[in-house]
Length: 84
Image 1 (spheres, rainbow, N blue to C red):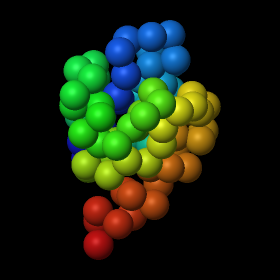
Image 2: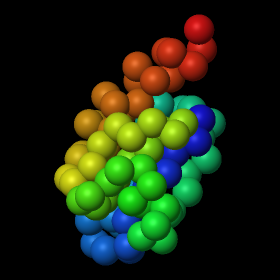
Image 3: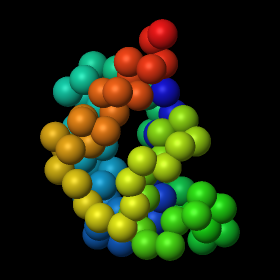
């Protein structure tokens, strides 16, 4: 699973990355987490408000900072889909 945290490096972006890393650890999954800070790359995903979260090239969240529990809830169905 490839996860991208989109944002310019602001506090919200850092918090989203932290919540994402915590969720991945809690789920015990093998995931590559990448920070994307280039505005052109962020805009390429259609993200108008950062931070954004992209999982396997699918935008799953933008414009807010969820808790680690919420990130887990976003990832769980995607994990199930990838194992089928």
